[in-house]
Amino acid sequence: MTKNSKDSQLLRIIGFCLIIIGVGCLLFYLLIGRFIRLSISPQDMAVIFFIMMLGMAFIFPQLLEDRNKGLSTMRIVVFMMVNLICLLLLKLGWDQPTLKSIGVDQWWMGIIAFVFGAKATQAYFESNLAKIPPSLPTSTAVTGAPTDQLIQMAIDQNRSTFNKPNITAVMAGKMFKQGQLEDCITVHLSDTQMTGYPTSVTVRPAQGDPSTVDVDYITDVATPKALNVIFTDGTNVSNVAHAGSTGTICCKLNNPSKNENYALTCNHVMNAGSGFNNAGPIDPPQGVQPAGSWVWGMRTDDLDAALIKIDSTITFAYNIPSLKGKQPRTLTGSDMMTTDVTMAGNSGSGRPRLVTGKITNYSSLLPIDVGYTDGSQPLNNLIVLSQVTSNGNSTTYVTLSGSGDSGALIYDQNNNPIAMVVAGNLQFTYAIPLSTILLNTQTIIA
Image (cartoon, rainbow, N blue to C red; front, side, top):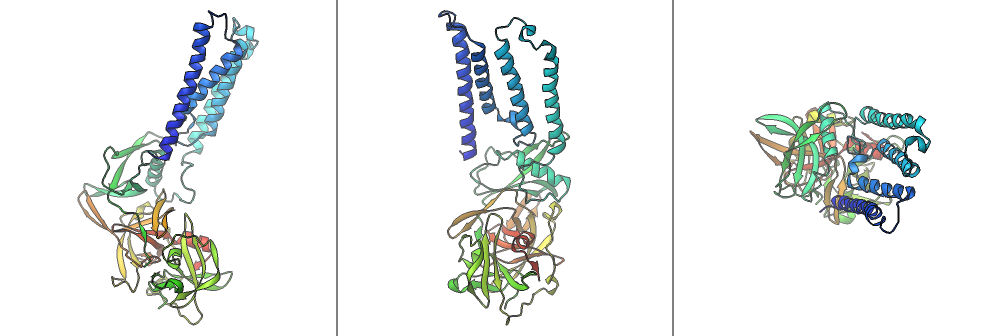
């Protein structure tokens, strides 16, 4: 059982206990109290009512959630207002024979109108201001077609469905159905266990009718591993202190404010495969083979990147000259399973250096664990790539990358740079968008 489901179950148990306490107190007063001449007071009744309503909130937390399954401030306010009015009426009017005796008869309709008005206001704001789920990662821009937004909403609304121990990744994707590409939710499983897992889920948009989205399960997907084992894109690179652990140069970057040039690779390449976060400047800089010095490194939930200051004696030459100076291309849902990409892999690996494939998922909505030498660390918004072969409804996936390809450049058929490889397994290659790297390093592609 996952932590979230345990917490939810515990809250429901607490809620049931509160309701049992409330009902028990009420029955005690009604059945036993009369025999011992103990009557229930207005204050006691108000307390009993509050305990029972608190229990209801614990048992049915969806009472306080909006249509996108997020906690709604408006619903909380309305819930508390209704409870407050009921508590006041119980306290003031429990032993009164008429509403007029309470002293609010002329305001009664106004109070009812106020409550219903608050409910109408809550429904209005939920419909018009919550069209995109607030719990979506803020760094994931919804840049695709409306279908992309719908699938992202479906994932967000059904997170508990995908909260299984063998689910390693959940993303917007495409699947072949009767020979045609169809939008879906792509789920990676660490094994073949999928008994009882839904083949589709329901999504409830803020406006319009509910609809269903198919789920495509890809089995036996291993945890992606960091792939570390000429200064040019694809050149071998390693920390002098860990010469046996090599990676790949992605591209040349420039910091305009410092007027310095760097070669880009992964932070774990410089750390011999470790997921350690160097958190910025390397002081003092460390020597790098074949030439240069490691001056900056960071490994966070969004980044795994290192900057190598290029020695003035080294000339950086792109294998593909038209890549020089281009800015990263932003992917959308329309790129999935349609856009051809190339990986400029490690030149010393013995494998073909340029490997082509497809973008299977343009941004993982939930973190994907990457296996480093010192344990797994999550990475957000990864691009997933593979060599895809389809036969009817059957699809096979083969990775683009291998050992030593961490840091490799991913670019499209028009030579637009897209991403840097960070990890892989037998079926998929995982890459960090270059736009994320440039933003965090305050650099441009030189």
